[in-house]
Image (tube, rainbow, N blue to C red; front, top):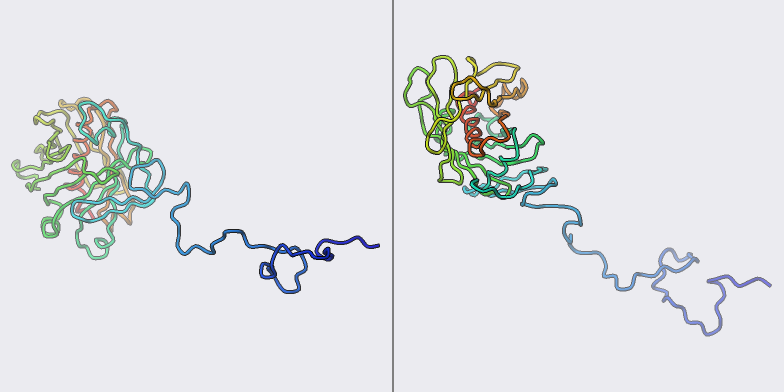
Length: 308
């Protein structure tokens, strides 16, 4: 006698566990029934949100994310795939936001390329990414200058440069007044004021007159001379980096350097977007590191903003 097989022989009075409507597949299907999951509500009508482990944040993080920084002129700045430097603990006698500088001896500065400026030649507000030697973002620098000043005064223009942290908070402000740009006149020379926090001066960078060499003096908040910056005789050269040496006041000891890095023939020829590197001692006072950063921006506008 043939043994009964599942699904073919049922005892008398057996009530099926699954109603006919629960069977899936074609009508000729004779295998086991497939039941709908109990409590299933059907497809979702909307995306429920980021999945576990995926980060979209405006706060600083150790992972890559999309960061939107609000600025005071209501212009949002979005940085995609950016890794920020982890926030160090606060330090005594250190302006808030400058504690990042206490942990580094090198800064990389990359100027963002503005498409409108490349296509039309219309001068726009400059934006700079300030990073450490690992490529992690430390700050974002945003120029705040009106349209008329940018396009009439060009590289000689006065400007306000706002240094923002990963939350969009302004931790430093650089103020450059309108000054003479000719080396033939030893008066009204270039200078820039560094404030941290905004409104509180912590140092100055002033130009020293010299007929051939670019020379700057780094000063503290009392306008006392601390360091010197000496550049080459020809500030614009091709296919090589240009070094501005940071020296002691007597110019005998080398402390560090500010380097204008060669960006390639195409970028150098068609844009004024520049890359800089700054090297200084790790134990240099954080305020003087901030002043050195201000000197780098002043050098950029004095010698390289109009080189295209």
